[in-house]
Length: 340
Image 1 (cartoon, helix red, strand yellow):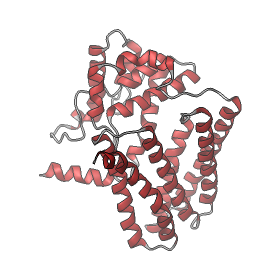
Image 2 (tube, one colour; image 1 turned 90 degrees about the vertical axis):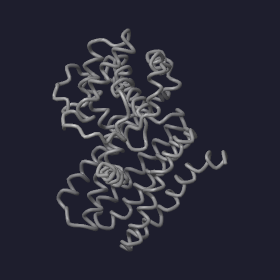
Image 3 (tube, helix red, strand yellow; image 1 turned 135 degrees about the vertical axis):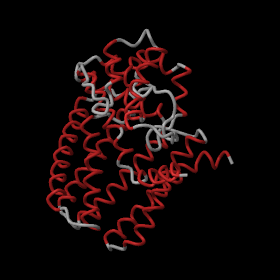
C-alpha cells in the first residue's frame, strides 16, 4: 500500500502527458464531445496528483518537476491545435519550445529551475492567449483581441529567450532555496518556527499550501530583489510572512460582509502575527510590505519599492491558481456547499 501511495501521484501526472497527443488529435479533428470528456479526465488527474501527494506526504522534487513538465507538454499540445486556426500560434509554439529547451539546459548545468520575472509574466500570458484561442475556435470569434495578445506573448517570449541566453553565457552559479546559504541564513528562524510550519496544513491556492506558496514567493522576491539592488533581506522575510494569516480560508463558509472576507482582511492578520511571533525580524518596511501586498483590495498604496515588488510577484506566482481549468469546478462545488 505504501508503494502505491508513493507512486500513484506521479502515475496520474504521467497519464496527463500520455493523453496530450490524443487531445491534439481530437482538437485538430474537432471531435468536441470526446475532447470534452478527455479534458475532464485530465482535470481530475491534475486535481488528484497534488492532493494525494500532500495527503500521503509523498511530495518530491521529482514530482513537482514532472507536474511542471506535464503542464508544458499540454500547453504545447494546445498550441498545435490552435496554430491551424491562426498561424501566429505556430511562432508562439516555436518560441515556447526554445524556452523549454533553454530551461532544461540551464537546469542540467545549474541543477535548479531559474526564476525569471519576465518568464512568470510570459507564462501567464501564454495561458491566457491559449484560452482566448480556444474560445475563438469553439465559441465565438475574437480575431483582433487574440492577435493583440499573440503579439504581446511573442514579445515577452523573445525577452525571456534573451535573458536565458545571457544567464547561460555568464555561467552564473544557480542555487535553489535549500542550497542558497545566504537565503537560509536570513529566513531560518521563520522556517524552523512551529507556528509557521502549521501553514503546511493550510490550503491556500489550488493544489498548494500556504507554506509552499510563501516559500516560492519569498525566494523569487529574494533573487529578483538582489538583482534589482533592493532590500532583498526584507523581501525574503516579508515574502515568507505575507500570508501568515490566522486560519485556513478555503473551507470557511461563514457568511461575512464583503470587506470582512479573506481577501480584504488576511494581510492585516498576517502583519499582526508577524509582529507577534517574529518581533526581532519585522521592521516598518516589512510591515508595510505585508499589509499592502493585496493592493488594490487593501486600498493602501505600498510605500516602498520592495512593497510594490512583493505585491507584483505574489500576483504573478498566483496566476496558475487563477487560470487553472479545475478552478471553475472547485468554485461551483464551494458554492453548492454554501447553499446547503
